[in-house]
Length: 122
Image (cartoon, rainbow, N blue to C red; front, side):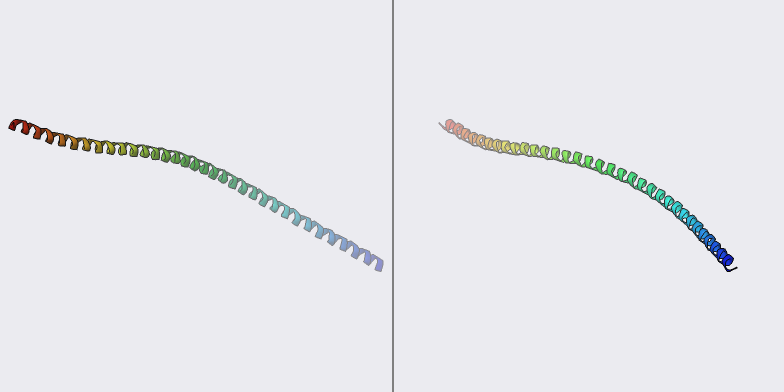
């Protein structure tokens, strides 16, 4: 009977081991299923991050293009202001020359007036 009892115990041990192995497999399958679900969620999150990053990159490119346009406009304005400064300087020079010519005319007018008075006296 001892041998039969030992065989029965061995069978029970094998059955319990098989049950634990089956339970472990179920647990492993659940863990794989959960891991797969988490990986899918991570993939979706990464796709959303990629989409947002591409949108941000598009905005950065738009801002860079606008900055280049502003820079070109600023250069054009600076060039125009420089031209206006040159024109203003030429006008100031011409005004100085005109003022000198008026002074010369005033002097000549005075000289002519004196000459006429001297001629009338004679």
